[in-house]
Length: 176
Ligand SMILES: Cc1cc2nc3c(=O)[nH]c(=O)nc-3n(C[C@H](O)[C@H](O)[C@H](O)COP(=O)(O)O)c2cc1C
Image 1: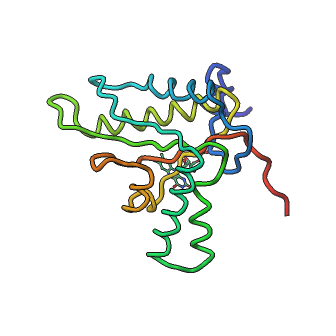
Image 2: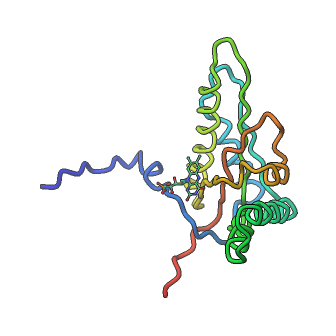
Image 3: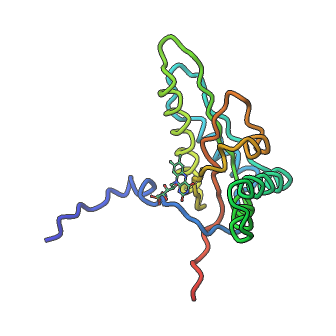
C-alpha cells in the first residue's frame, strides 16, 4: 500500500506552482498582469505597511537591465560567453516583474516581518500566475546587488531588490 497521501484537489494549485525556466509567448496581457499584481497585494502584511513594490519591466527597461547585467559580469569576469549569458538573463520570457522590498523602523513590526510580507507578495504573484495558466520563475543572483543593475531597475537607495519574476507560457524542454 502506498504511504503517499492523496492530494486534496483544493491544494492542487500550490503543488502545480513549480519554477518554469523556459517561458514563451503569450505572457500576461494588461488584464492578466493587473490580476497578478492585485493578487500579490493580498499578501499578509503586518501593520499594512505594504513593504513591497512590483514593477513590470517594459522592453526598454529590460534592454537597460540586460546592459547592466553584461556590465556587472564584465567587471567580475569578462569572458565572452559569461557576458553573453548574463545579458540574456533579463531578456528571458515575455514578461519580467521587478520586485523590491523596503523596510522601515517600526515600533511593533520588525524589519524581518516586513521582508517576509514582501516575499509573500512575490509568492502570491507566482501562485496567481499558475492559477491563470502561466509559468513563473523567481530569480535573484548576485547581479541584482550590483550598483549598475540596481540603477537600471530603478531601485531606491532604501530598497532591496528581492527578485526578477519571469512570467510566460511554459515551453517544452528542448530535445537534443
Ligand atoms: C528570493 C529567491 C531568489 C531566488 N533566486 C534564484 C536564482 O537566482 N536562480 C535560481 O536558479 N533559483 C532561484 N530561486 C529558486 C527558484 O525560484 C525555485 O524556487 C527553485 O529553483 C526551486 O524550484 P521550484 O520553485 O520548482 O520548487 C530563488 C528563490 C527565492 C525565494
